[in-house]
Image (cartoon, rainbow, N blue to C red):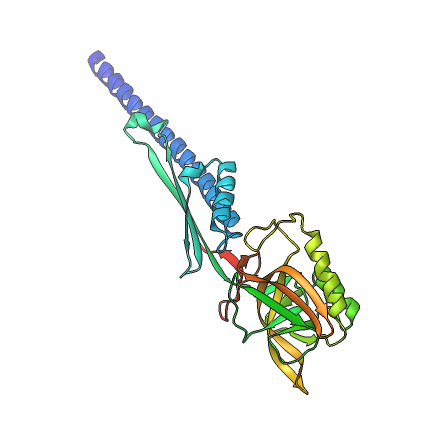
Length: 303
């Protein structure tokens, strides 16, 4: 009888030891899985934030975009060397990725090895469908736009030319000058129908443009090197004529948006001439899946 009791006690001890080992192993595994999940979430957040930060300087200034993305990644615990960014102009997308090794701290005693986690993110660029702060200078959709090439926006009469002045807040030279100097404080969207501005606007144009140029915090700004929110960059509606009377465009429909970097302005008896260059630029805003692109892009995170 005593031998039987000793045998049963020994069996119980073995079973308890096995159960305890199993429980400890499961606890270790759960703890490490929790660590992996936490690190994966942190890495994903870092990659998402980095790609979003870099997007603002693509496609025209990829070097600045790369630096912005790396700066944000480092702020989220990811070394610049561990972040990859790939811009695809054909697909108009920016993809980012990073990897990190997570040590198997507790479960390693059970034979589990370290884990490598991965995080990816992808942004899709597209023509913006709406924008705030547009200036009341429009460009006809039939006008070829060559990015970086000097162009002259001639305004003064609402004729059937390639460019024209628009009445955004309302008609009148004072409304026009305020919108040109400060930007329209409302939102313009694709398909909006706008009236043209047909008054005497040469002097208001010159004053407003000179104010925008002098307000730039970086006097040496160029179309490739400009500070954030530089007032020398204007969001311009691209339009198609809707109503034309006596060879003058009276109403237009917005079909897209372009960005114009202002370099100089002059006026004469025929009107005003704003000299600058159309550029590609990305802002935060809705994108449209259909329609032509004029260099003003919005973006969205798709992966």
